[in-house]
Image (cartoon, rainbow, N blue to C red):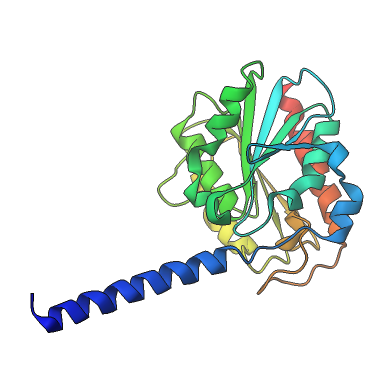
Length: 243
């Protein structure tokens, strides 16, 4: 092998390693749950084991909800939503994702379904990139999912529910600049005929969790807690169709 070829290989290898290391460091710079979240949700409200946060306030839940976090958002940042929905009688689970990105763990929901065979109905959903990934899981496992929950999110172009009847709730916010309403509405044709779309007035992207401000997002005109409660109310109302 020529010396110049060896140098080229080492240079390319160095670039690859540097890029991979840079991505790893970036992926670990997560959005952490706010102090307000930790005041509203304590460790008595959930169990944390095997990479999952599990919320179950009432025993023998018949419907389970799996929420995929947004990119680089720590799972517990959605703990208030999970706690409130569990108080409604549902089992709610939020997974930790590889490199804090749901796209690396598309099928992780199956793990929780296998663990809870007594739960007969499952809704899968997620925030932002988590919703995109949840939609992919739902499309690939139609026999296991009764509902899809999209929070500031929409399916990728290769996922199409338009010919089916999967119960779907899509919630978006008018001041979201990360996933603006026009993007959600542009892809509503990919949703099923039973899909319900709801716009939150005054809300923004980061308000779908409780993790503080997010880069490039719009400014909300309602408090984070108000947005969270509005989201819970919409989801709880929608979930009654599965009772």
